Image (cartoon, rainbow, N blue to C red; front, side, top):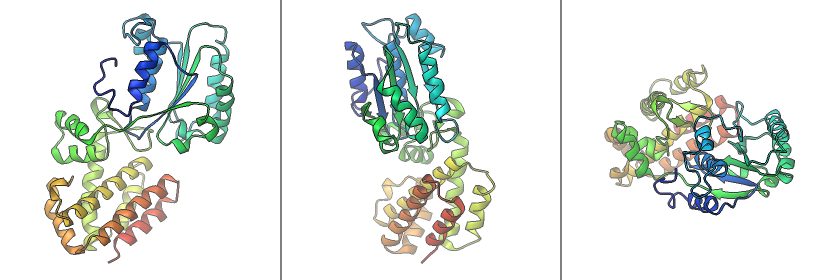
Amino acid sequence: MNDRDGVEQSGGGWFQLRRWLRRGEWAHAYLFVGPETGDQDQAAEYLASGILCEDRANPPCGFCPSCRRLAHGNHPGLVQVYPDGQSIKIDQLRELQRFFSLRAIERENRVYIIHGADRMTPEAANSLLKFLEEPAPGTVGILTAKRLEGVLATVRSRCQVLRFSAPRPEVLYREWTSRGVGEEMARLFAYLGLSDSGSGEDADKEADGENPLDIAVFADIAGWVVEWVQAVEEHKGKPLLELFSRVGRGQWSAPECLWLLDVLACWYRDVLYTSLGLSDQVVFIDHRRELSSQAARHGSIAPLVERMGEVIDAKRRLQAHANPQLTLERMVLRLQEE
């Protein structure tokens, strides 16, 4: 971590973290915010490692007993809380507070990380509030979130906020091509901000930040969308029933449905770019003929902009827990309007 490439380029947050650790100065609570492919969770673990490191000259050193225990995931001074299903619940926060209350007399530093703080229930957020207001000596809290507005305002006000940006598309593209991913799929991953941050089949996190998204599953979604949108545009078959056969029967999870909509929005973006003569910037480079055909069929950019808007609106509605069947039905009917 100490030699992380591009620390200063990742939104300024990494540079600030290193400065705090070198000075041995840190606040009692932080809130790290960034997009779903941002560095906030990684930064939280980096800061925790530095605070708990025994080498104060170069924290985190990676070699001291504390760093080795952290690397093996068994350091007693670090507690990490993750969403239980769709949210972080009050019982999880109560357990966290109980854990630290039992260690209040210890002098060593202690750190807790709450991943997905924007997914705390109101009861959990209010329970955390008192913990933030009256922190135990030597305790540092680190919250991570994708959406700043999703964190209770009174919680935000008691934390030092750092923002982290997503990796640049060209960096992501190089990551994926270096793993042998085809050019079109690498372009799509990079456009959607999907980072090659892990290894093997569980490298990536899906849009809702809950479960790993298998690369093969994502490729299946993308391939299906490319074929399905042809049926939508050409009024062939029964695209609504085909969509429900995938979504309604649980073949894809709710977060994976959001990826479906991201891919669909990217497709219409490519049709728009083709219509504007920017075919060199499209993501679906293996489907330029289909893109050109759809661009010619629409004749102007207005209907394409409207289609992109419908897809984005459907995603927004699903994220707000609207009825999936009604939301997707409304979207498909609007997409088929001439």
